[in-house]
Amino acid sequence: MSVANLETLAFANTASTEPSACPPATVPIERREAPSREEFSRNYLQGLGRPVVVTGAADSWPARSKWTFDFFAGRYGSETILALDDPIRPTIGRRLAFSDFLVYCQSPSLSILGQVVTPRPFYASYRPFSDHPELLDDFHQFSFVENSFLQLRGELRDWYHKSFGWLFFGPNGTVTPLHVDHFMLHSCLTQLAGSKRVLLFSPKDTGRIPGLRPPGALLSDLFFQDEGGTADTGVEDPASLVGVPTYEAILNPGEMIFIPSGWAHTVTSLEPSITMSFDFVNEYNLIPHLMMLSRKLPQWARQIDTPTFRRANQVRWSARDFAALAASSPPPSRIAGDLRGTRSE
Ligand SMILES: O=C(O)CCC(=O)C(=O)O
Ligand SMILES: [Fe+2]
Image 1 (cartoon, rainbow, N blue to C red):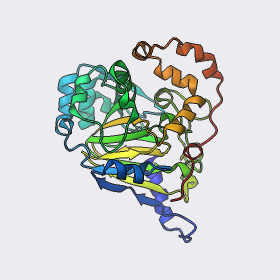
Image 2: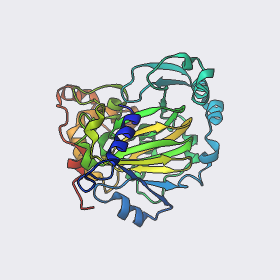
Image 3: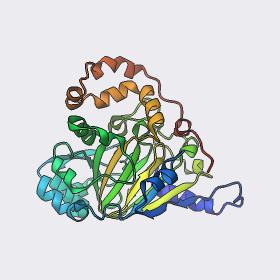
Image 4: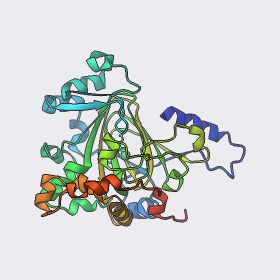
């Protein structure tokens, strides 16, 4: 699959001779400045949800000017980072000093990594917020959208930041292939440097994309392993997308895109890029989230069974207790639309 394929297809759809039977191929994602909480709930959270780019969302954050490649190189450059050609189905990976990777991000030819032939440029995701809580002072969560995980306090709040907050670093041309975020969580992607193209597909259409990884894949599934028979990222056959609307946005620095629970997405960087991502739950995706938790309980147990979580939440079981179940659980057969229900649009 490549984003270019999706674009080709979108172009082909535009030429459809049956416009009434075939929805528009490419739908620009709405762009809004400073929505109120009430407006955000009404327009973007209800029913299947609706993606939106919030312009200027991060403009008041210290991170907006502070989080440059040089900043991370100076502060955290001596740490080791894992760079992968594909964050979901990697074919090649390299461990290297973060500072070296940041050189690669800005000028691949100046880095030893730039000499490694890969299908796509190397990309690195990094969960720094537990080891480096000082970074949390550089931004604040958005006031216009409820993130219920933020009601957690103390160590459990740390666990949330450690498990669900990500930074992505990469040069021009990185691709996160089409996927649905784990456990039917919503996601906010905030762009701090460079721009990205984001393509989304509604939960009501994801079932028409053959081979799309079903929702509920865990972080560990997403990033490191396949789950028997369910891990194909799909859309290798672009013709299969005919008639499926593609929602598209360019995300610029300071902007945030809200990806509602169950919406499939693929992201391509157009420049050297730094992105922050938080997955979360609120009243609008609570039920689908709980349904997915119960369907994938062994995997969820594996994900949350960290020393911090065990201690702070007085957990007496161990993820190992579920290991046999995890191995025997069948691949989920439903699609995102089933879990989010439908709404009249
Ligand atoms: O920015 C990217 O490459 C994709 C991030 C993403 O899909 C996520 O955090 O869920
Ligand atoms: Fe995602």
